[in-house]
Length: 250
Figure 1 (cartoon, rainbow, N blue to C red):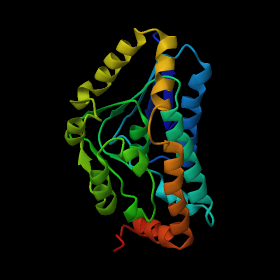
Figure 2: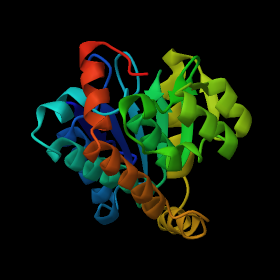
Figure 3: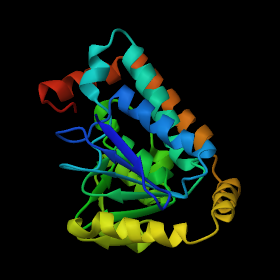
Figure 4: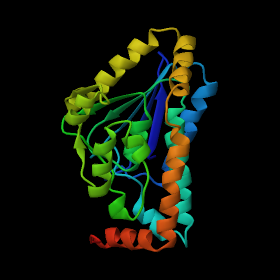
């Protein structure tokens, strides 16, 4: 199983991504994330959620090999739809979502972290969008919830990453802790939320989303339109094949 989840007796939903070697998310994995977080709306036993990963890093993005192995435009269409649903499911989850980033957080990892309510990270964790190198666009919407607008653009154009310590300075990462303490710290925050009235917390989450100035569904969908165009123009396939071949397009 690439996605494991459990609800403890306190009402804490823990979702763990486990897809070695780098937690690249395939279409089925991303669809499952959406299903899990969407189900919280009808499960009143859940009071807060934690999303994290085990292994080498939090998430290296989508499974590029899977996309390239599917015929014609099927891969890009399916992964874009599953990412759209997964990011929205985290953002619109009926309870607060805490993301615990254990190492690199790239591409769709940024989409998940940027959609969350609270982000904590292990020391040395790196956040970034390598989309330009992959002939695609997307999740700048979510990156701008983590870093300021101009910094986000610079990261988009250059594919450079930003460290957890930098994001803590912006206030988008709540705390940077040792890797050994990451999940423990996430659970401590979760228990503070569990101690509050559940109905009020759910109302607070809906209220917080309702007053946000940017509609992340519309914004991300706009970005995805350019990914479709780049794919039709052949740029996406060239970049994906270069990745598979271990080459870099310039």
